[in-house]
Image 1 (cartoon, rainbow, N blue to C red):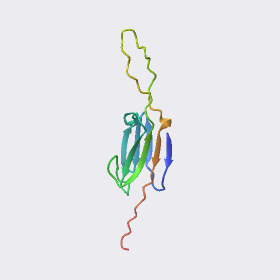
Image 2 (cartoon, rainbow, N blue to C red; image 1 turned 60 degrees about the horizontal axis):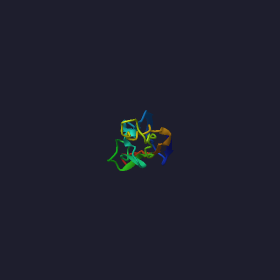
Image 3 (cartoon, rainbow, N blue to C red; image 1 turned 180 degrees about the vertical axis):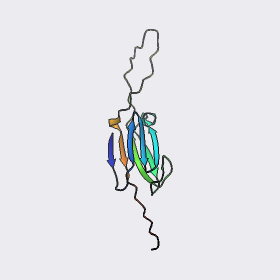
Image 4 (cartoon, rainbow, N blue to C red; image 1 turned 90 degrees about the vertical axis):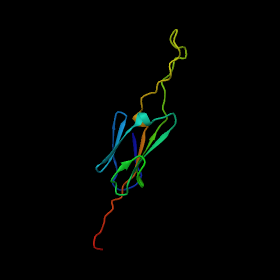
Length: 117
């Protein structure tokens, strides 16, 4: 997996177990099944957070925490002849190669509230 740091600040944590990617930021965590997200074209999955990094979401938040780029799905070769008396089997996807995934991490700026100023 190719990890790129895009900005300074508190960066999300990243852990890959099989095809399950876990993004963490403080107490917040979000799991993404990369094989399920992979499609027949290159895809990007956005993970968003609040300015203080309190939550992680695919749809809500005012700033990026991570952007995951998945390559297009590849398929195993198919025997065009098929077995005698059988039709041609549909193509089967290759397992996801984690080395082809790029994760861009965006730092979360810490907000310091000053009281009495």
